[in-house]
Length: 520
Image (cartoon, rainbow, N blue to C red; front, side, top):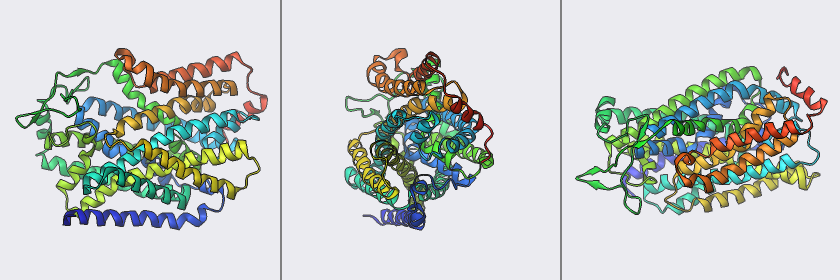
């Protein structure tokens, strides 16, 4: 290994040591009971809640997937996705956060998302709890695989180590860390990792801009690529049968720009709808210590997201200007952030910036594993199959499931040509369509009943698979992102079934009214 690579590795090891130290610090407190382990005893401050919510949400997708999209096909796809996510972030904090914090406390002091849905509709037979837990397990296996792909790509490109070896090593580290400290350790480390991520993005953005001769020079270099800098067109790299972009006279070859019309823009912006259903963000709303601190959290979180998304998209564009032929497949393009960092910075600093990618990956994957494990152990195992299970038994089962989910995620991630952006988009659509509509209706429409909730959840989750696998391949107008049609189908199902069946009981309606004004 070269001296520069050793210095990068040293910096990353030091960073990982700090993360492990946080886990050790919180281990004793986390293991007091399941509420502390899964929700931190509702003790998050506004800064930790905001930073940990956004860091766990964005993951390595922010530092690898989004810059990769901008590098590969230009501005349109990346920037409309970023706009949808920024708007979705703000609206979610503004309308959902405070109401969910109150309602989750009224609904039997719910500490997981399946708990909340089941308690909200006063279930005796835990159908909602079971359905929501199964969907969480399925989609978080997919989500976890995207994080493991990030680990494999990062270490493979940096040190020339076999992709699969490093992918499994990253998975093992995340499992060990999540075992240790639970939700509090996860949230505290996510706070630190959010800071590392945004500093890394801004630093690489500034250095890349300077190296390219300024932003004006970057734009000048990219104008020759058809559709690359357009909002309503998309660049189309010319590739061979293996998906490798062609190069002629040292320049990458692009075909005629593709159209990026209103339907496509609407589809891409619909990424913002996903926020209403992603458990890793919703749990932060439930865990904040005081409702009146959510205003500060909203401002902090939104500013972080806007800066990070803007930097990530711009880095992809700068990367194409500086290294136009370095990354010739869609999968390889997701390494542009690490290439810029290692090329433009001293190895020790580059190592710390690379830790930003690792930070994003750890902050997300530990959230995914913890939430998925809680869905099985707390909601399926204790909530349905073994109601007399003790707290200690639930936590033991949770850790077994952690390992199982990580193994499934690692198996999904074994293909080195996996595209992080594609994997994340499917899981994001799954959560957004399955939980987003019913989360909104449960908080804001008193007439929503249990039958409507079940119908909406099943319809939304099923439509994600149906649209992705059967309808989207038809192309044309059907080629839109599966989140949008699945979300709409879920909304229709909730309204129709709720109106066609009996209204909620007087007790449930009284709780709904109380949730508007509860002091918390």
